[in-house]
Length: 211
Ligand code: FDM
Image (cartoon, rainbow, N blue to C red; front, side):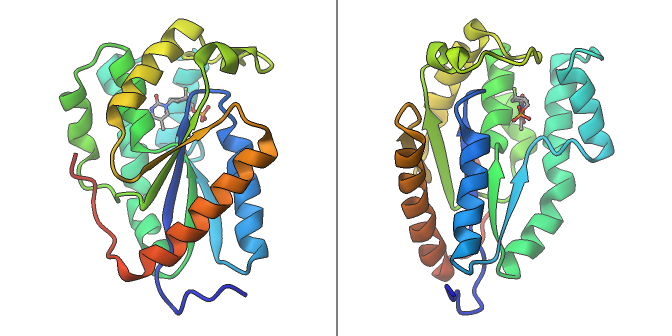
């Protein structure tokens, strides 16, 4: 069993374009960590289970129309409504592996043309990740992977703009992993990054996003 000495859990975020492999990598990483005896949970944003999440889900499925700023704030609200639970899990020693977070919020809304500074404002005060793993795949390659499911943002031109914004958001917590490598190789890299992060975050306080 991997002991964390009663310390806090790590906030580990996976980011990347649609079809970059985040969701399967998150699931594999979670079973790996749990197999090591580590307390860990998989989370994702948007969390489509809440009432805000249901509005987001309808919007993404093109079943409802919302103004760009309105949907941006709903995505943000969906993170805020989970902030307290997130904090108590982390302080209780559970590591969270999160499929998308604030960076998706910024990259996708900015790709529609909203000002980045405006987009950042409602994210200030959410918990800051200890590690952000960006699964890097070319938008064209991502699109070839079984195609897109037809949700609102799943078009190559749009994903290219999202990629540009993601690149400009990179900060010191980011690690870029080449998502075009074989699944197993990507997983190996994620495991190592996650294990290091979990042991290193022990001595560090949880902080908030400041942007
Ligand atoms: N998305 C996701 C946003 O536009 N803003 C956000 O804050 C978040 C978390 O929602 F296209 C977009 C990204 C993606 C879509 O995500 C749904 P999943 O991972 O396919 O559920």
